[in-house]
Length: 535
Ligand code: MEZ
Image 1 (tube, protein in one colour):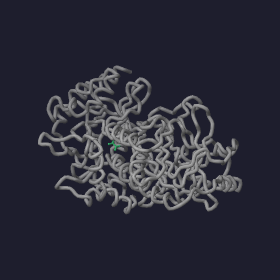
Image 2: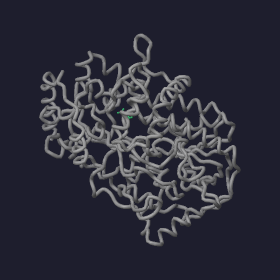
Image 3: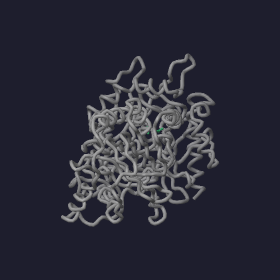
Image 4: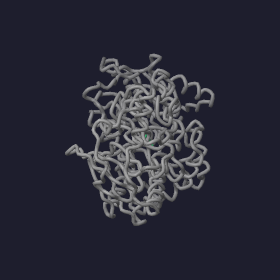
């Protein structure tokens, strides 16, 4: 089997000369749509079912998420007292970039903030973001252009008000980060350096080499630690609390050391719990961090918050698949934006690498399903990402200068990306939809705000590269400000689990048995073997 991989790799090395300079056309809109509908995992009917209860009843989502949304709260069988252990103005649930940005925006308003996080403060998808943050600051660019690109990328299904705000507030968000201390890359003349990404008509990516999220989180975390924000680590939320009117009034956390519940009364709550990669939807490997188990979604859903676009997920086209321990690890789109090529087993290109991610992922899957992929010894099938092409096109040393993180991460597996291509296949990367929010971050439930990947609508059915780092900053700050302002105008309410009683009553009326306890908190690698084979 290794011979097959090596022989194919040889073909990549020999076809490099022919491929250099080769122009691969972008797809016509109709062909792109056909490709996506035929091969993208969002279009596999068998992966979906209808929701039987809750605010999105009758709509569909993938089995893995449906089970969590209709899951049973741990508090159904293990009741907790509802007398508060802690009473704050604002409870932020989640310690990634969106939670940190929210805390920094709320703190100047003088509210008492508790930031509770499942793992350590900073452990999140934010730190894993590599390629950059899109902001329209080039003289030839504009927020209007950014809006148009993102709308096209999102299959025209984006919430236009949310999107307009995202792009218009982009430049101010970048300035805010730089004022805090983020060091974006610059050109030799001192100007900020901008790069293109898939689906973007202009260079618009600000970046810190290929560890942009790590740099952002470093700065955001330091800034929060310097403020009056109390941090509670290893304390995930397991249920939200409501008042008599059904508005959000706090949360029940679980202390992961002692297993004890911590009841928090809060005037307002921000959910910033991040993504879903560790659900391994449809058996896909993931680029996400260990805690990305969709926790905020079932919590909000049981409280009555509506979801939007809950049936669409992003499979990043270039997750490494070989050697096996690398499965799912992200190879940044930045590599493709400077000339990295996707190549099939026989050494030929098959897609323009800067199509939007839904189309590139669909094209990779097509190659693999139609026998033009390379099979690894463990049975995965993938195509090559030819990274040495980057140095060939841009000059020796480019990979080293721009992608030190990629070189280091992949060298752990005895692959030098300056010399060798890497086998890749789509990896579950992002939840395109999530909890519906209005432009100040409030969900359909009063006093419950949402920021970052747990929210939905901004990105439509396919997010463009670099728009999630922008989203966590713009909407993290908006949610922080709005939730703090609201908290100043109301009092702490009486705590109830009325919403849970209503949810369970709905279940009894025909919602079927709960299959799982949710939120899940950690991936279940022990009891349920991950279905890792490439589909
Ligand atoms: O926004 C992203 O998902 C991103 C920049 C990923 C990457 O390829 O680096």
